[in-house]
Image (cartoon, rainbow, N blue to C red; front, side, top):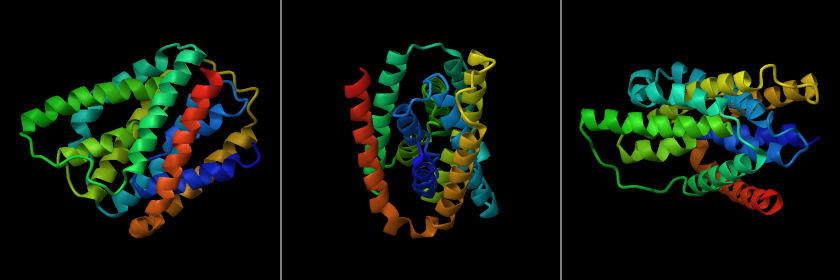
Length: 251
């Protein structure tokens, strides 16, 4: 696990550029270690919170508003993320859900910069109905697996013509933040008190410092997003390989 902080730093940097936290990749990296699988979502969510906090600081500094427009999604995602985090799942089911989440996340990153959907405009009432449903589904999945869900929300926001790319990134970051916080609460409550004896506090601190610095760099380099897009594609391929490896090794 010597190189794990470095991989976390690079992951945070690449995901922060797009306004994400990197939770799906943290999970993939952690599953391939000897860390107990019950603790893995907690570590991933804490790292997620560290990265998206730097994202939100950047968007606040840029005076980008995101709360009201994200409201239709987070009203249902927050309680559902908590409920998902509270659910006790065995290792096989957790790995199946994680693998399919990684496959979806990898595909999403692979399509970065492309028009996945043709944008359309909906009425306010329709936006709220869609937002409440999507928020509930993504929140529940986020809580169970230990991700923020923003990487799945982002293409849907493009489809709904929710705003500029930077505004959508701000919405995704806020969505990830509240889901990660709620999911972490659920995960912690489920395992209370969580058995962290096998995990060194120095190790956790190192990971947090790595992702925080990576998140800072990602926000600093956001303006050269296009020149770094190929790195996100490489990351996507690594996620897909990790998903395949998990399916082959554990399922």
